Amino acid sequence: MTFRRSPLALAILGLLENGPLHPYGIQRLIKQWGKDQVVNVGQRTSLYRMIVRLEEAGLITAGATERDERYPERTVYHLTEDGRTVCREWLAEILTTPRNEFPEFPAGLSFVMLVPPEAAGELLAQRRDHLTKRVAELDAELTLEVEGAPIPRFALLETEYQRSVTVAEAEWIDGILEDLRSGSLTWTPGPV
Image (cartoon, rainbow, N blue to C red; front, side, top):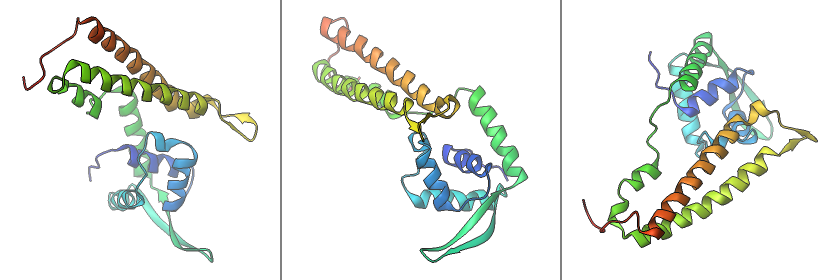
């Protein structure tokens, strides 16, 4: 069965590399390790649906059901050999091959001509402010410690990447704002 990869599927397979987990444990680790900045686990139902799909594809398998007086029964999942192979293949593809991921911001930019240049400048300045705050948040994440020791750099590579991309976007917006202020970038609002 061909399985379409996703960040959530990769995260589940990757976490199961360390040993069996139940869905709540997977969600908790994703959040605890800060991977929720790059993997959407806001809805537990999405996590459960993905686990079912991974199991149907033979990439993970259900094991024993844990019982604890404080919690309902929890099924523990294990990574299969096929799952381990697919996880490594996905990781290699993701790390080597850039892919257009269709983020919202470029889509919004493609229709910026619908608003006056002055309004676009105000909106972009607001985004620039949000980016400045995000860089500060990422800087704080990069200096976090666990039990008095810095987090190893390999565990923060996605945070470093997000910071670099955020800084680059802020610098690009600064250039656009300057071009709007100088009048070297302008348009008449409305459909093209």
